[in-house]
Amino acid sequence: MGGNRYDASARWNGRSGQAWVQLQSVMDHMYRPLESLLVDTVDPARRSVLDVGCGTGATTVAVARKLGPGARVTGVDISDSMISAARARDAQLEFVRADVQDHEWAPASFDAVISRFGVMFFDDPVRAFAHLHRAATPEAGLVFLAWRDIAENPFMTVAERAAAPLLPNLPPRRPDGPGQFAFADPTRVHHFLDAAGWTGITVEPTDVECTLPEPELVGYFTRLGPVGLALPDADDETRTEVITTVRAAFTPFIHGTEVRFPAACWLIRAQAAPRLKTPGASAVTTNV
Ligand SMILES: C[S@@+](CC[C@H](N)C(=O)[O-])C[C@H]1O[C@@H](n2cnc3c(N)ncnc32)[C@H](O)[C@@H]1O
Image 1: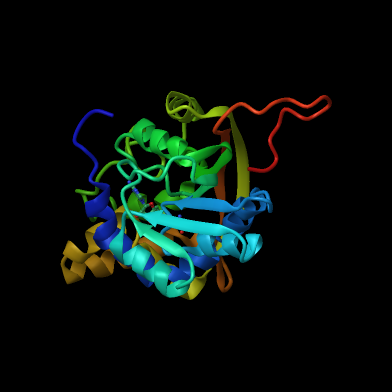
Image 2 (image 1 turned 120 degrees about the horizontal axis):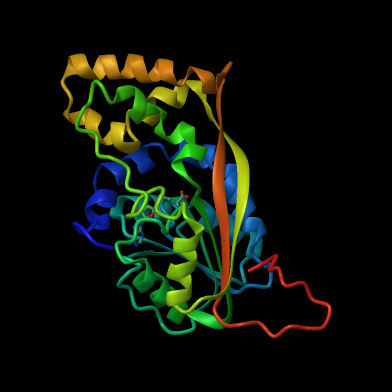
């Protein structure tokens, strides 16, 4: 992917990673419906699962709980602070600090690879998915959640749209580069997975309502996203003005004590190797 190299390590070891750690319980709550959806897709017979871009480990812990003590569940993330938070959450699980684009796993060591929003930040997605493919057994399935288009997820850009006149240097979103909406185009995702050796690729829309407690809203938008990243560098007056303006812009999403928004996502599945068809079996994969 051309242009300047996206420095995932700098971003996720800096303010973004710190914000996710500070907001761990808010993010856990907000994305719990997506955690359930992802974990439900994992076949309970899987014995060795890798959670990619596991962050502070919510989905890693949830899948480990589902599979029970006989399973080996590993979380991997590029962020020191997020991996430390994940280890603090569950000291029994294995959490590896690594860049998935470079990390060499033992070949054929995982029979399922999962991710909730942890695979859209690669500078070289084909390289990352090829490493994951080598790490997968021939029977392994891959399943992950990624955001659909910006236009379908207006909640995610409320803050930057409202703050733009006050913070004119906010970086533009790049739907064709690494970032939150990098996998909005299913054709690109299909291409990345196919080029990396994955097969049986399906991309299915899924819409889930997410919530956060209203008192957490200001803490959320002042720490995360382009506005959250820019605010620490703003002067006090601008900061106050941004908070007032952005808080007002979120009004349509506020319902009493709760903030509610629809998360428009893709549920993407693939297999490490083609599956033999049994007579009468459905072509659609239900579990990985
Ligand atoms: C949006 S967060 C999602 C975190 C977690 N999956 C969740 O749902 O709570 C994206 C995560 O991907 C991680 N990440 C980004 N690039 C990565 C890379 N190249 N290798 C490993 N992890 C990466 C970030 O550090 C961050 O934790």
